[in-house]
Length: 306
Ligand code: SIN
Image 1 (cartoon, rainbow, N blue to C red):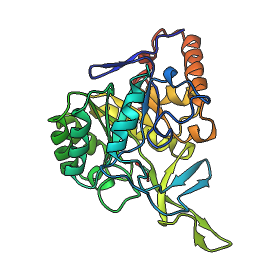
Image 2 (cartoon, protein in one colour):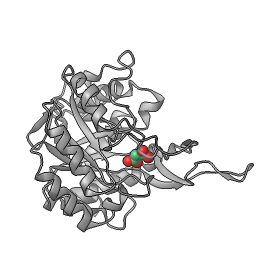
Image 3 (spheres, helix red, strand yellow):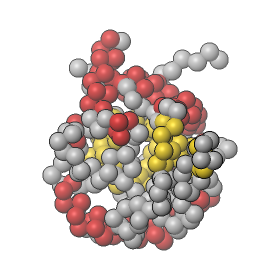
C-alpha cells in the first residue's frame, strides 16, 4: 500500500480523496452506504447565515456525461449547523471542511465568526466564491480579483484554520483570481466549481431548469478542470484541490499529475455514494503498479510536449 497522506497548511489528511460540497449533504445522512472515516475529508454543503429554501424546481437535470444543477444554496443556516452538526463531527475521524457562502463580505464574516466562537473539530473552511446559481454573492466574488482578495484578507483575520477559496471556471483568467487569493492569505484553492450550462427539451421547447441556466458538473467538465488545475499549479505556490468529473482512481491521478495535492469527488456520489472507496483502492493499485510509495510523488509530474 502506498502512503496517501497529504498536507495542506498545518493540516494533514489520511488521503487525497475528499467529497465535494453539495454532493454529500452534511456528511451524516447515509452511514450505511459509505464509511465516511475512510475519506480524506468531507467538504460539507454550503452554509449561509440564514436557512435557505433554494431555487424552485426543476433544479437538476441529467446531461451528456454530466448533470446541470441550480439548487440555489438550499441549506439549514449556520445556527442549526453549529447546534446539530458540529457535535456529530466530533465523533468522526475524517477531517471536516465547512463550505461557506454569502451575499456580501459581512455575511461570510458573520458565519465564520459564529463558528470560531464555539469549540469544534473542523479543520478549515472552503469559501464558495463561485456558485453560478444565485443573483447576489457567490460567483460575484469569484470573477473579480479585488473582491476575492478583500474577502480572503478579511477571513484570514478571523481564523487560523485552513482557508480554501473555491474558484469558478466561468472567468477569462482563473490564474489571476487564484493569485489574488494566495496573496491575501489563502492556504489553498479548489478548482473548479461548475461550468455555466443550459439544457433544453426540443419537444416541449422549454428550458429544463427553472432558472434557465445552471452549473454543469461530471465527466463532461474533467478536461476543463484539468487545464485549470495545471494553469494554477504553474503560477501559484499554495496547494490546489482538483474538482471536476472524478469517477476513478485514474481520474484522481490525472488531477494530481496536473498539479492537484488532493481532489474532491462530486457528481459521481449521486450515482454511487460509496464510490470514493473504489477510487482510493484504485489509486493505490495505480501507485503500486508504477512503483510509487507516496501519492504526493504524482503532484505536478505530468509530462507535456512543449
Ligand atoms: C447551488 O447550490 O446552486 C450549487 C452550489 C454551487 O455551485 O456552489
